[in-house]
Image (cartoon, rainbow, N blue to C red; front, side, top):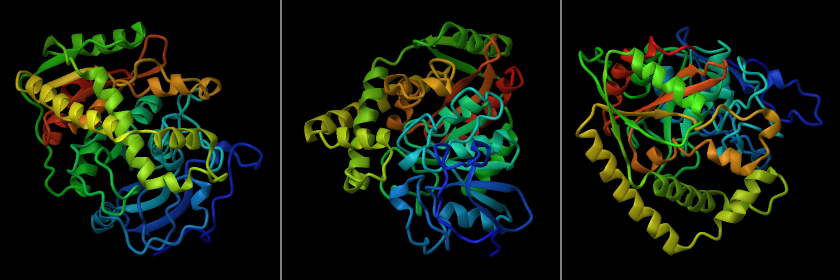
Length: 392
C-alpha cells in the first residue's frame, strides 16, 4: 500500500477553518492498487487500514477499518487505482452535500449550486475529471441526486445486487452501492468490476418507455420531454398510484434504520445541526408507522413490477427542480423535495439511472430511467439510445 501523506483526522471545513472549499472533494488522498482506472471511494465504505468517518466529527477518532469492503477489494483485484476517500453529507443523512466539518465540495460546472448529497465528493470528483469513476451509496437518492446536480451519470443498482459488506451503516433495506461516471460506458465498466454478474449489453433495437407524470418544474419537464421526443422510441403515459406514499414510506424506513444505527449519537455536539434534527425526529417513529411503511413497500413494488411488464423502462425527471443554490441549502423542506422523484425506487428496490441534461437556461437537470429488478445491464443498454440526445 502506498499513501500520499500521513494519515490524519479530518479537521477542515468551509466555515472558520481556513480550508479552501475546492480542497473538500477528498477527505483522504490515497494511491492504492494498480495503474488502471482512477477511482474515488465514498467515505462510508471501508478501506482497510484507514478510518471510515462518514463525514462526521463524531467519528473523528474512528479506528482504522480492519479490511476492505467487498467492492473495494473487487476494484483492487481489477487493477484499479484508488486515489482517495471522497467527501459526503454527514452520516449519508442529507441531500445537499453541505458539510461544515469536512467542507463542501464545489460543484464544478454549476458553482453557485449545491453539489448534492449524500455522495457529494464522488459526484464532484467525477465531474471535475479527478477520477475515471467513483463509488457512492444511495439510500434515498444519494447517488442520483448529486449526479443530477453535477451533470454526470449515476446508477443505483437493484437492491442487493452489489455487496454492502464493509459499507456503513452496516444494515439497511434501502441502501445500494453504485457508480458515478462521465459516460455510460464507464458506468458499465465500473459495474462489471464491482459485480461479476454484470455483463454489458447492446442497445435494444426498439424501446418503449412508460413516462410518469410528476410535479416537476416546467423547464425540467421540458428538458426531459426534449430528450424523449428526439429519440427513436415509443412512449406511453403511465401512473403509479402509490408513488407519493412510497416517498413517505422511504422517509419512515430510513429514519427508523438510521436511528437504529446512529441514535446513540443524537445528543452529541459533534453532529451537524441538520443531521441531529433528523435523528431526533426519527426516534419518534412508531412501530405502527414502520409497519405501514413496510406494507407500502410491498404494494409499491407490485405496482412498479406491473408497469414494467408493459414497458421496457420508466422515465421521469431525476430532480423536480434545478438544484438549490448554496444560499438556499439551509431550507430543510426544499432540500427534502430534491428526493421526491428518486426515493420511491429505493423503497421498491428497482435499478435507477440518471442521465445528465440541462434546461434551456443552462442549469442541470436529469432524466431518470427505471428498469426491472435485476435488469441493470439492460437499463444501461437502453440508456445508450437516449444519452446521445441529452445536452451535457
